[in-house]
Amino acid sequence: MKQFSARWAVGVGVLLGTLGLRPAAAQQIGGRAVFPFLDLPPSAGLAALGGMSTSARTDDPSMLYGNPALLNADMDGHLSLSYVGYVADIKQSTAAYVFNTQKFGRLGVGITYLNYGSFESYDAAGNSLGSFGVNEYTAGLTDAYTKGNYTFGATAKLAVSSIAGSRSLAGVADAGVVYKHPTADFTAGLVVKNLGYQFSPYPGTDRGPLPLDVQLGATIKPEHMPLRFSLTAHHLQQWQIQYLDPNARGTLDASGVEKVPTRSFGDNLARHFTASAALVLGKGLQLRVGYNHLQRRELRLDNTSGSAGLSFGAMIKISTFQLEYTHATLQAAGSSEYVTISRNFDSLFKKKE
Image (cartoon, rainbow, N blue to C red; front, side, top):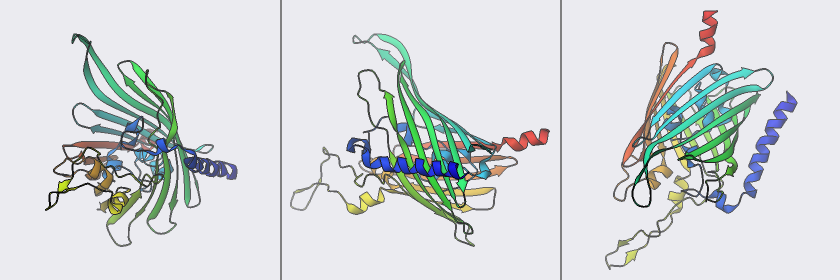
């Protein structure tokens, strides 16, 4: 057991250490990375928490996409299925299952599939060549091991992007650690996400960096309060994530002089955080709200932000099933609906026996 725990500690340390060796281009966001769908929250639970979480421990297996170290005993034998309807015909489906082993620790299997719909193809003369599909998917294995108050976890997955028969392939790794307070309802987590390599780019394109993200967060439920709060800091490997459109025109002051937009320390700092709260109304009912400031600022319209960056969700347990729903406004022009259903299949088989 000591050797197994040491391997996880060394593995997480190596991943964290490699951040200093990453080239600057690999630390950019906003369209500078390949496989950007890796940043999308695949389940209702993660979407309700502002799109990410390193520290919220639940019994939903899909939380392994937030931090592989979130695997815990409450997930054992649970299978979760998630569906997301984005704008137009873009849809995402995800399946995650967790089981415990004596030899290899707690394992999780996750598969996510993103379909962009069907598109018409034309030649240079405008003649129809039929339709083609665009889709992306990942398949991964997560391994987690708990030692005392700490859980170490890592995920290795294969990411594939396909457009009209052409494909791009990448190997992706996530690694994290979660600390759980022995008595208080408090957890803290650190995760390095999307560390990897694009094995084969699309024909005629250059190999690009993956959307690397280092996140640190905490979740706490104050004693005698029915509220659980989460705060997550993201993109810690890069301080400046505030984008200014070089073509945007500034406003005119009273003298008719154009005021050019400048970077703001406070706005840039706020973009590094997501916040969420859950109203716990018993073991079988929760109401959730989340806020992502980076998403709100980058996906707003010119004249309004609307409810971009906000998410509202609920979790309810009915019999042996757990249902989760989240309404998330990814951008001011539209919203997305997330549905996750999970069940403990181990208990189902035991009852049959």
